Image (cartoon, rainbow, N blue to C red; front, side, top):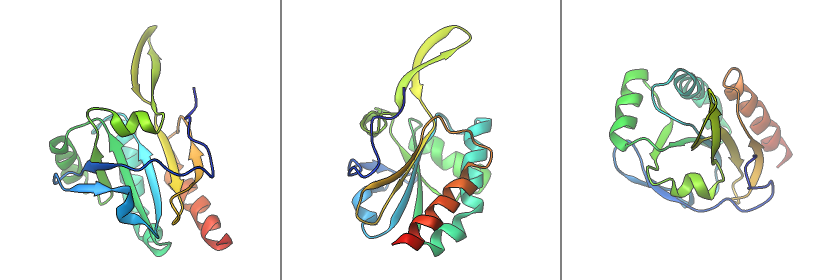
Amino acid sequence: MASTLKISKKAPAFCLPDKDEKKVCLNDFKGKWVVLYFYPKDNTSGCTKEAVDFTAHLKDFKKMDAVIIGISPDSTNSHANFAAKHNLKVILLSDPEHTVIKKYGVWQKKRLYGREYYGVVRTTYIINPEGKITNVWDKVKVNGHATEVKTTLGESCRRM
């Protein structure tokens, strides 16, 4: 199942705690581009690679007036350890109740070794300075993803 949010729709508002337990809201970034990515779990191989890749490209995203926000169900403490261990510079938000994760349609039924369970489906959104979704990547493959998002955002910035 793909995300239920569509391109050109207003991105659902949210406020969640970051790794330092400071409340961060989507509205805090009004007037900026937001790359919002959802990932399953801190310190797993794919999630670590994704966060490290976004951090590596952060300077380029900042030049486009964009912020990178990652959301997972992990605790703020887990995020703090994850960020420190891998020197991550992206914003990591904690959603253990799956409130925002469900709003964005990324809490879905998954299958692994014949077992069904619910979890976060790796998904990325680009939200424009007016708060509308411009791009969606469902069931993200990590390799090359940060570069693809950066390229797409660059094209969007040139069109504005």
